[in-house]
Length: 264
Image (cartoon, rainbow, N blue to C red; front, top):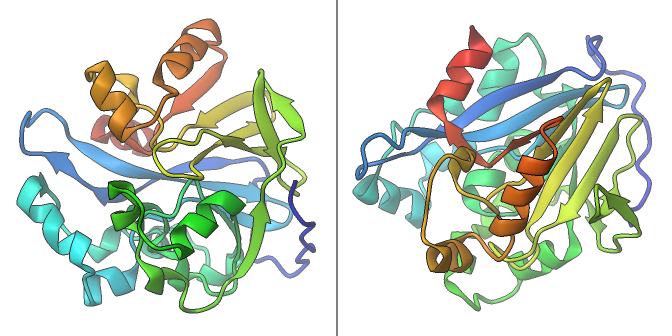
C-alpha cells in the first residue's frame, strides 16, 4: 500500500501517454568473459502525472565526486564513467526538462540504481519501506555496501510502500498511484527490500525485475551464486518468463544490444 500522490497539471510536453523508453544509464561490462557487455536499464514512462523514471543509474555528482564503490568498479569491470550516460542527460537530449520527471520508482537503492536522485530534486520517490529502512540502517551484509547515503541528502519527498494487497500474475503486488497500471512487486533477496516493477501500458505488459535475475536472462550462473548475489527468485522468474511470452521481462542490467536495437 502506498500513500496517494497529487497530480501535477503543469507537465511540459508529455504527450505520448503510455510510451516507454529504455535508457542505458551506466555501461558496466565484464572483463571476463569479455562478451558480457551490459548497460544499467532505466525506464522512462510517460503518464498524465508527468514522466516516471524507473531507476536512475548514477548521477552527475557521482562523476564529479566519485564514491568509493565507483572508484572500485574500473578495477573489476570495464566502465567508461561517462556523465553523458546519466538519466538527466538522456532526458534533456529527448527534449524534456529535468523537472518533467515528477516521479521516480526504485527497484532498490544501490548506487547504480538511485545515484541520479539528486538530479531530479523535485521528484517524488516511490520505494519499498523495507528497502529504505535497510538503506538508512547500518550495513548488515555485503550488499549493503552499495548504498551511498548522500543520494538522499537533498531530502526528497518519499512514498514508502509496504503492504502488497494485490496480485499481479500471482505475485504479491503493490499498486502505484498512477493512471497507467504500475506495481511494485516484492522480490526480496538481492537487497532486503528489492522489488520488481510491472507496467501495463495499452496492450503491452512489461516486468522489470531489477537485479533479481541474471543479465537479460541470457547469462547462465550457478544456482548457489544466483541465490547469493541475486536472491531466491531466479527459478520462479525463469519459469514465469517461459509461461508468459506475452510479458516482456527485463533485468536491471541488459546487454548493450538491447539499447542499440531500441535506438535503431
